[in-house]
Length: 148
Image (cartoon, rainbow, N blue to C red; front, side):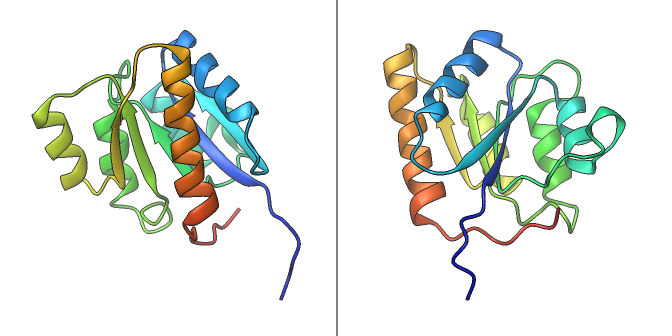
């Protein structure tokens, strides 16, 4: 058995610069070895996942943190695309968005989101959310192996 620790590849899909910076800062305090990649649109998220355009060398993420409210291709559309493609559908997706709309929640789960979290207001509360995500998804849960 290989006891070598593998860096976890995390993909943050967030168009809000302030929110992205806050999530990055919260993860920078992480105890888990990980690399957080950030993209700012649905189109760029799909480019990253399909390793195209400027993301040809991207590694397949172990976990995706996905905002729903994105310019162009929506987060719901990214989720739909991910969960219909064999090479992507096993990647856990944590929806992390400002929306508390029942329609958004129902649609995200019907598209096989793994969980839905409404972004809190303020850095300290966001840090708590990121810490909970990290504790559950990166410390407790066994993630499927990814292909690079």
